[in-house]
Picture (cartoon, rainbow, N blue to C red):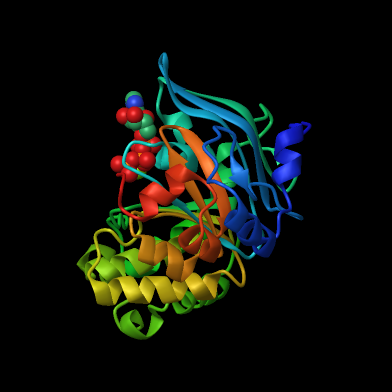
Length: 291
Ligand SMILES: Nc1ncnc2c1ncn2[C@@H]1O[C@H](COP(=O)(O)OP(=O)(O)OP(=O)(O)O)[C@@H](O)[C@H]1O
Ligand SMILES: [Mg+2]
């Protein structure tokens, strides 16, 4: 699908240029996304995405890319469509009968909504971590081993042991659970459960991990651990994180997208979004005048 001329024009603005320009002009009030929604060599591309719940439109014609080895933060007031858009990226909205998605979303150039796409392997390639930790009612070991088993990633017990240990290590949980692998995952603390869910997502070697407010049920220490983990995981995976904490977005992400009433208002380098946003609505939100 061709980009609109406007989108193509805004695609490769360097942050420095944007900041210099900013000194000389008023903030934008456009409805068209400003900044850098489109990047070079993306992992995922979303073009003209619209989402409806019944007759109600929740997402208005959004185009954005997800980079490789990047953390992309999505921020915006409650009800602006962040979770709805995030769920489009691994077809989680398919589970909501009244929800319809239009437009094109590609992973490595392949349209994930094409009728030939099987959503089970898709959701392994684009994993999800939810707001509330949701370990299966199984042992710690089985929580992590479940995905590799059902996706047939391994046949031997030894390989499975290795995947479980590697995933728990990457999730920063191995040292805390190595002696209790066969105890229930639900017996862990909230922060440990969330890292277990991250280990479960990693175990099937995804390309993208979607996180919807992954720290909102965690205390500051557990939050710091998950944030550290996100920074490390970026070396291997693309991460898209929805957060209500602007400090968190600033700490963990390289790019930030600001949503407002179903529109994608602005996307840019995180530092630029928080120090010198280009759009009036972004500025109002980050300075606490809205939301
Ligand atoms: N299952 C659903 N059925 C009908 N409408 C829905 C459904 N889920 C979300 N919506 C509507 O879609 C819009 C966007 O909701 P969404 O949950 O994506 O917002 P959000 O930005 O994630 O908000 P929050 O920050 O509160 O989590 C809202 O108007 C919401 O009421
Ligand atoms: Mg939400």
